[in-house]
Image 1 (cartoon, rainbow, N blue to C red):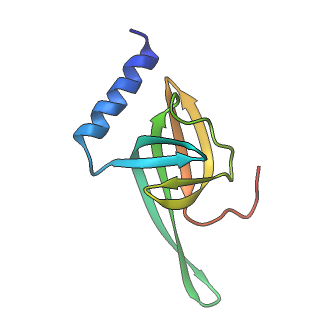
Image 2 (cartoon, helix red, strand yellow; image 1 turned 90 degrees about the vertical axis):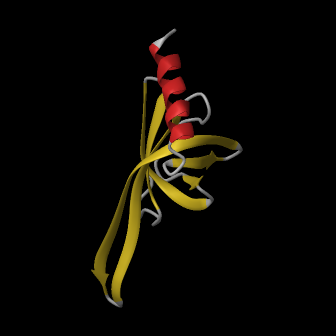
Image 3 (cartoon, rainbow, N blue to C red; image 1 turned 30 degrees about the horizontal axis):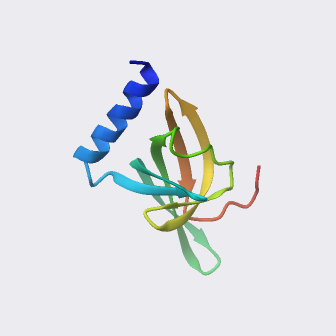
Length: 106
């Protein structure tokens, strides 16, 4: 068994055992169960008081979803979010995203 196969199987096992971390990730017509492993809620002052955003990281199998480009729109648990970055290693895609649309593209 290759490391890629082992890592993908471990991701599926962890998601099944920890339903509180498991999320559905959709990119275009592709969909997969992933693990939301980090969520950072941020608040910043603005002209009208305060604004907030949530930045999070989700891991999905690279066999299930193509690598999204920075700024791409994906859905995580039915919420449209924007990709800040993506790296792929060992059969996993690690996608960092924000609920606030980024100012710049690629």
